[in-house]
Image 1 (cartoon, rainbow, N blue to C red):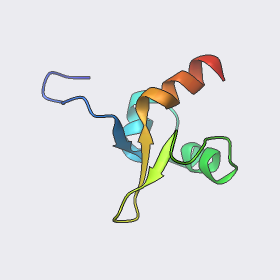
Image 2: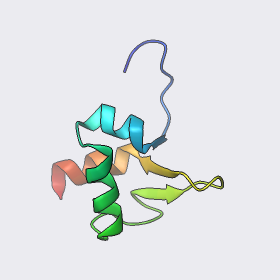
Image 3: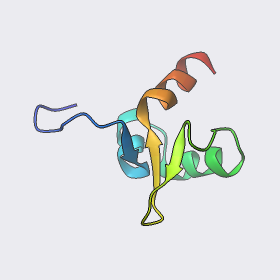
Image 4: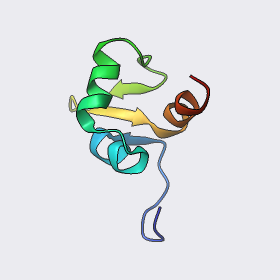
Length: 64
């Protein structure tokens, strides 16, 4: 994370992809195949966008 980027818990799939190295398509597949848990790993924003909880997703990467 650069100095100009403020830390935020919920990030767009695009930003999650940049931070983790997973493509946005891979993240979407993990969501739609129920690999990741709604309201824990991801939420749907009021505008309909999918947002990832970067902390819990990184926890999933480390521990499964």
